[in-house]
Length: 351
Image 1 (spheres, rainbow, N blue to C red):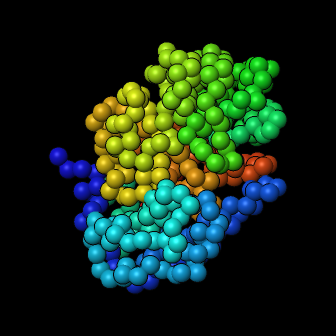
Image 2 (spheres, one colour):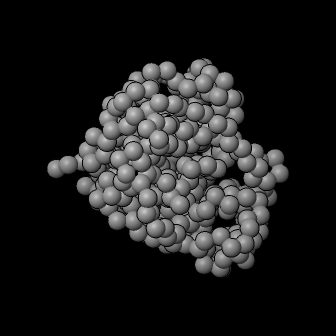
Image 3 (tube, rainbow, N blue to C red):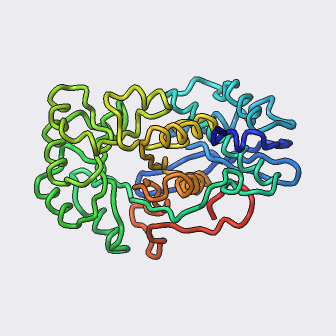
């Protein structure tokens, strides 16, 4: 049986130039997002990708070092990806190893876009898949001390919105009751796998129990079940526990303590185009549902994740709302869920 990657692996690309460009966006007071736009050009076409690493100094070093060597010429897509993965793409070791995957994805997604454009076909056509309306949820935090204001503000713009919220130990029973009343919470993220970040949330059995009871139909993402009390708090909820941060490969899914009903297949976190497509295949074979997630993209990376979601898991609670929802005060008039698009031209871009 032909794998999903096999359908695109033989695409040819001619690469003459690789350019890097800084992307910056002010998301709110004290919140500046920096990414790197990767553009591959050749034979009169260009492909784009986005490095979504979270360390500004690593982006600055990437821009200063310039394009990685040895990537010009004519390749099949499979051979080009092998070449990318053989290189050390960091002038200095990154603070976190996952940043290497982000950079691989930036270059390989640009290569996919370029190869498709040079071939004159869309990703949907190349894979033989249908683009479906993509359902999304809005992911947000509730501040500290937490209030319902970020949810209320967005519901005021679009009452049909559904949310994935980052739970913290500071959530009060009163706040939880307010959130329940909205009927808009589809998933709760416990952030149980972050260490040394601004969103760390240690295992909290009481929080897990309160949330599970208050939102009996919500997905419960990334609890830290390494402690006995935390595992006991969610012992009866395995059917709705999902995983995001620990998933970088098929092997990570296989290593989970119990078979999940659903996992977040996040392209930039998996990195390799081949491994991403293999992960989609694995989830389908194992009857594990998938959903997509973003990385606060500010360039073409968001649309590329939305495109993949529309092809592989359109009706899931995709954490891929329009990027403007990341602003402290989103503008009115953003497209409602599900997102629809007519992909008429070649390439790997969501219009």
